[in-house]
Image (cartoon, rainbow, N blue to C red; front, side):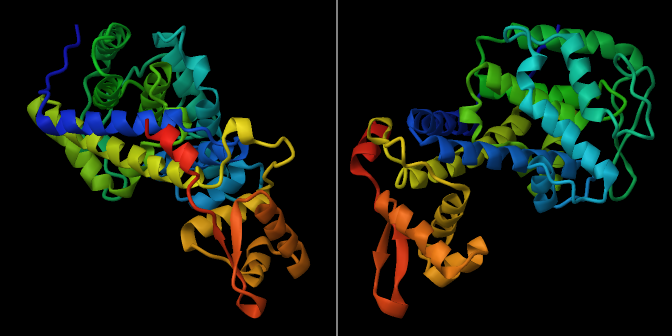
Amino acid sequence: MFSPIFNYNNNILNNISGIEFSRGIITQASLIPELDSTLKKKAYIKSVHASIAIEGNILTIDEVSKLLNGSDDVVDDRGKNDVMSYGHVLTNLDKYHDNGRITDQLLIDMNREITKNVAVDTPIGENYRDVDIKVKDIDTGRVRFIPPSNIHVPRLMDDLICWINSSNEISPILVAGIVHYEFLRIHPFKTGNGKTANALTKLILNTRGYDIKRYFTLDEFYNNDINAYLNALKTADDTFDLTHWLEYFTKNFLISVTRVKADVQRLLTISPSPNELDKQLILKDNQIKIINYLQEYGQITNKETSVLLEMSSQASHNNLKKLQKMKIITRKGSGRSTFYVLNRVNEKLRKQLMK
């Protein structure tokens, strides 16, 4: 039976406490549907891009975004297939659990979907790998580590899945981190293990109520500093103790969710409470672009809006007037010195959020 070795040290406990605090704020926040959708889509695109980049896909995040938004204007067919296959799995995560329980077959189905039309050099099987493999560094080609022999994979995966389905007494955050490491250590498939590990990590968090509205992504911090990620995994390989890895995992989980909390709190300045929401006040894509610009730069002029939206000065002015009418932005200055800023925090919503 799989039994992970780690210590509940102060760093891990403090990180979990911080995650729970941010999670509480985010889950209590009420954003209008357009902004809710924007945050989900942003996390989805970043997650897909980060996970495929870790495994060597060179598509930019803009190219990934275009593909996931329906554009076919990307010439790299293999990269395109990689994006679409992994994106499909993330969109349909609920297919890969049975009332919260993980099974061998569902994991095999997940890996098959992730790797279909992608792994041209490695045939996709109907089960776990039946050969021994070596995990090599993408850049240098050097062997990074050697996973267990294929003859042990079915037993190791049985033990891991049994542990996952019986780990209800442990924080879902730690379960996700432990499973992420152990799955990569076993490397149960011929290819696509990294993306499958990321998807499985998300699945565990989602089924246990820790998807945090699907506003955030863990994949990004792996990709931002791949060496730190690999070094943290290696400490567990070397010592059989997951404490340092879980410190790394929970620390970066905390960083990610804290950033989302800050985004949500900024968006609350422009999102009316559900009881105050006029059905006619629906934000359009161009208005969301203006809002995102204001969040980043603090103010915007009509000329800057025209460039941002790629439309006439009059059409840009109409979008700004609509946001003014909705009490989302305020006009400052006059004449050629006119600019617009986001309104101040809605105190009523802020107090509700901080309860």
